[in-house]
Structure formats: C-alpha cells, structure tokens
Image (tube, rainbow, N blue to C red):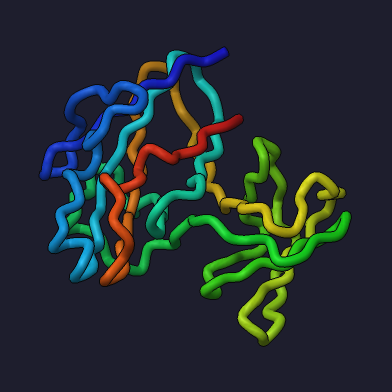
Length: 194
C-alpha cells in the first residue's frame, strides 16, 4: 500500500511544510467570530506526494461548511493566478436511488464522465440530467445499489502521481454569513482513494 504525504504551501504557491494527519490549522488559519458572522471564503493550495507511482481519486467528505476541491491550470499557480472559473468538486446529498441512478441536490456543477465517491467506492457518471426542480439525476454504467437515499456522495478528480514527486491541488472553504459556531474550517475532510 502506498504511503502518501501532504504539504501546505507558501503564499507564492510553492511547497511548504509537511502536514501530519489531523493537524489543526494546517491549511487554513482558525476561523474567527467575525469571519463566521460576516461570511468568508478561504483557499489553500495542498500538495500530495506518494512513495510509489499511482493514480489517485480525490474528493471531499461532509464537513461543517461548504467544502470544494479543484485543480488549477498550472502547478506553479498561487492564489492570485486563479481565475475563479475552475471546475469545483464537492459533496451532494442523495435524494433517491435505484440500482442504476441516483438523484442529488446540486448547484448545477456536475458533468458526465466525472467520478463519484460513495462509501469508499468509485463510480463514473454516465449522464447528468437536470430534473428542473433543483435536483439532478446521475446515471451510471454499473449498478450502484450500495448508494442509498440520505447518503452524502462526492465528485472526485484524478491525479496521476509519480513516486516521490509532490503534485498540487486546491481546497476552498465557504462559510455562509451567520453560520453556526464550529472550531475551524474543515479542510481535513479530504478523501483519497485509488
């Protein structure tokens, strides 16, 4: 099994210190009361390294605030280089499910051929249909009987890792104005699978 290491970034987008599992404030500073009351959006560039060459799928697990992951156009990008049009990967609530499709709540940020992680299993989305009622139907080329209504699922992107070569991706945390009090952002809820 591969050993993976995460690193945070300097403000210029270059790799910084290694992050240990569960380290609080590793990617985002602590959430202040003012940020929580007024609303806040934070970005963090995260680096992942594996001790072996492998392909990984990266998604986000349910957290206290809205969490998104994405890959920028260039590995050397710093926050000022981002366009704000990067494709975001996030989590969705399953409203209903059958063996071949699920219906999820969404903001319209879903695409055919993307991947979906549910309970550690990976599925590729075959088609996306806007149900015109604030939900989307996701069909799969394989049975998805393990996904049930009420579950949370995450879209995921693919990173091809070369052994001992860190590769970056981005995390975005959005705190709505007047959100309940929680201790920090939820950037540690990253799912990595292969």
